[in-house]
Length: 136
Image (cartoon, helix red, strand yellow):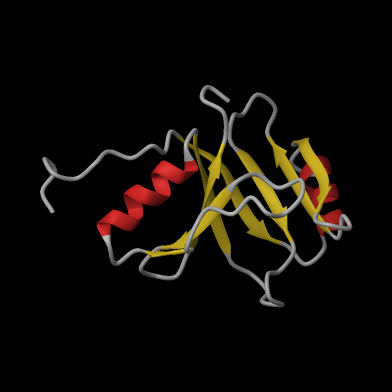
């Protein structure tokens, strides 16, 4: 596909990097004590608050680091989160390219979680595309 016929991305920012950690409380303590990062978020979500989203960052940084528990009981691994003001438009753009390993549709069904979808790069690394207000 030539650059002339391909649509431009709606992604505006790499907002959050994600590290898998064995213990969110221990990781939060280490990042805030050893690296002197500040807590940017510590939120419970899900129908019964069974999940936890924890973010830390150096003071003044616009990018954040999420400290996530292992997914599907798999230790280690990382991913990035990118932000867009229109997650549906970005999903449609990627779908139109074809051959992209992405979730079927943006998901906003989990209480307290933002509208997002996941995709994987050719090596299997995960990218969360998250909707945030323009300028947010």
